[in-house]
Image (cartoon, rainbow, N blue to C red):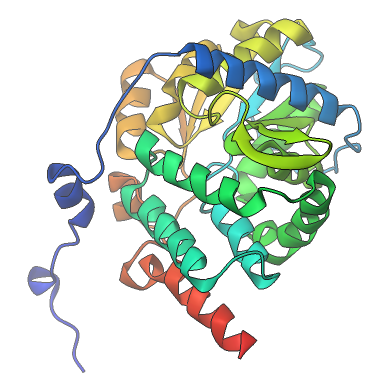
Length: 327
């Protein structure tokens, strides 16, 4: 069958249409007391986990002779996780692994799949969507032991996450490690999941959403709120204070405009695979940009390059495939 000419191909404008209809609202909100609490809790958890982190693996580093500065002990680097270090959402991949292990039902996996479709389609996050993801995750882990989830998380990383790490971003992180600097993940994902990913990548540690546990068992509640937006900036600020860092020497990397508060804290902000709002803001501010996706159209509109019509159904297809294998 002959392909339609470029002039007759339909334009994919769903993101613009959905935003215009108000389905995916864009909001900014200042840090609140709960944001500060979430940030401080994440910083404390990250410092504890980093003490047991293994030495970093040696990999090739990008050619940037003037930065990072070797031997600058007042500097560190902070990396967002989803679509910055890893393709897609870590919580979705974690959910797939838990479904495989019968932690929840097919209808719950369908909800995770929709959340992943949303994440790819919108190219960014918003508070309502993050709240839905949070509630899904908390309902699943409530009553389970922290040690159990950590052990399972190691397996899930190998199954679904390892091959989705962006080599370019990994090289940027390694450059900071090679310069003698600490490197932290900063993410709304659970701190336990984030810590596993950080360790497997040879990073210092992770700042993540802290779920309450009593006696090593999850209660289904959070300490503060998800580490998202302003809460990330508070976490970085708290960790920098505890570690004696000079934020003007530090670097931060993210794909999302929601992380502008965190990026604005440091002296060396980077937009990595940026969504359209962050790309615009980065250009206005003169921030450095890196895009490891393929396809200029995807780069222009801030959607992952794989997010074509077929890829948008990837989350749902994964759910169907897993279900079929179980029969």
